[in-house]
Image (tube, rainbow, N blue to C red; front, side, top):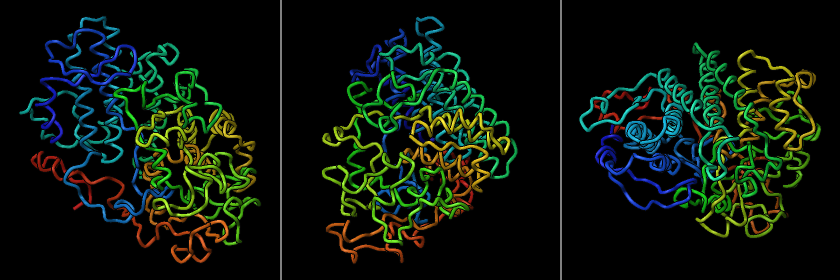
Length: 551
């Protein structure tokens, strides 16, 4: 494998270590030889810090889903994606897996108790599982490498390991991690950001839901076992004393940072408390239209009466809320946002609301906008820093665990009890400020689909957090949803001050066309998996095979 061939010469001789004692807060100071390292608990902790630094945090998830436009057309959505020579989607996870394997092998010489050693081995195995999960999600079968390799090791040209075996290896790593990691309650405050038992169980639940639903909707056997794994793992997380942060919007600002917010289960740290003093530019990316919500996403949000206007695939719902306002009826920008699930006030700025540099005026002047101004994750203090933003990135939060439990229970039995809905979906709705609960009686009385409503809750709660594309794949509806037109806001000359309609592409209702269906495609025979980079195939001597129909 190309990744290992590049890394072995660099990393077997020496390791990049991050100096830190009790928290992730120092820049790298030196490169130490193996002879002088791997001796103390501090050495193990510093080695593990590299895994946290390598985590993907804030990024532009430019995979062409239906809920967000990210600076225009991209190769995934317009059908022009080809087979790359190389790809970070493949190589970066393997770099991280190498780091984890390196710790597991060299850390055995540390002069510490078995409990201390196993704790940092648990961190390494958590991250190894995390990176294999990312690989399987995109590529399916991938080479399973559970040790460091010499430059002439035969495993460097190993073929892809079948998906089921990789998933089992992920489960095994996470079971080990959950055994030896500290609980949320016992993790010292100065170690905030390090993984706990909750993180291991939550990741296992995420992977198991992914596998269970994918198998179910692709007609493969074994889905029930994975769904039960998801239920069991999510239930273990629920026993760890986590609660939802009182303020939904605060989850994505500096208000939600720190160990007192127990909704955060796994977080990428930034700023002075983070490894390497990492920063990002998310608030400026929102301002520049790189994370612009579409009308497709706006229509996911329920009205205050608990009823939708459209299903989660943006087809008309069997029961429309009487509060629904159609853009073709000359509705104003804010009217479309009125009487909705309160989380919509966190998703986008209203017209006239103080936004980036001024009160928001609908338009497309900054970036390739949908004219809906992305608000979720915007921090005014971070905006002033420009590439120096330091609000933390939640990677796994307790709300997701509750959503996993609800979906897994429903998909396992094609039914879910009101008690389970109250313990999951309705807890999330209460935090959001929705007064209408989701119950079986409500679904039946209003001719709704329980599956649709569970999926809606997931889509709305986790909007703009990078889940939507993968969800469409595992539900096997990407081929239906993704080729459709992406729409933005309704043009209104009075409100869109300074914008001329002639400069816009509008549909017959006067709604902004962000990306026309003629420029969007999804080929079911190949696009459910990513293409394997050509160099990986070549350097394996052809043992690594390409995914179907990627020629």
